[in-house]
Length: 432
Image (spheres, rainbow, N blue to C red):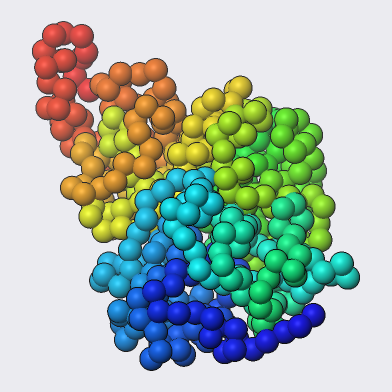
């Protein structure tokens, strides 16, 4: 294997180039630090990425005009830069990002990725993140790979031959890790409600964080669950070890845990390493609604920043302030709704940590609607389950107010009455 230093490899980057950065825990931090060291030689370099973990040095104020980040999903490390104009947000379904590269809508010059060391046949693994990265390295003119012995060798479509990489840069560093700790009482209550909706032989999609972990912790007595998800974390491991997750009844990839990226602790990275149970596949396949819907009882568990009393879901912004992104929520909400016996669930605390209601009469000015009112079936808070499918606007309002925080229910009832006053005046409904 012929290798090169990061400084030498990154000489290929020119002013005006468009660069893709590998996602989440696979972000090639050594390559990025080496890139910013060339800042005095460059200008107008555009970086494109999903959520990344670790430092994002190219977003620092001193590099304004030299590097500009374009996030398909906004992580904590770039949020301030985007808010202050040193970066931008590109709204797009996660399932469609590879199309932007393949169709040259975004013409990538360079892809910066992290891979495992090559095996005896010369194959490296993209490890923890295949997502849109496979499309990026297929589309970019030049691929530079940080070869990291800490990157687990995952199977599926994550294998790439060294011949597809232009520059191999050896640099070993432990992957970024996250642990959410013990779910709060509120999160446990939400988890219990959501778990009550999960049926035996269901196919799960969930995010990562305390609410998904709380749900998973409540599934010990379920049978033959499957997993086809955009992402997963440590909470899946105990269910596999206890025989709860078997994937036996999945129609697509039976017996496999299908995902496009993963993020957690070292225990998770050890678990997926060379594990034939795990199939890491590209996001335009994993998040394809036509693929998702083929599995039985797809139960999609997603969250929101706020939701209005008609069922409109804001999940990417706080008013005008961009906070995260569209991601794969709509891909899976729709896939679950179309799956035989499927359930599309939005799970969220009833109030913010500041006591503000997350169920509102009107979304904040500037708030983005990620999931429309027509797509939402279930909304779950610590106060119960609201079922919206097939209900009109007034009926939806009543359902949602029942699961709102008690401190806000009376106000929401009055505001809903004012909003739908004309329908009440017809004598069709009684006061809420």
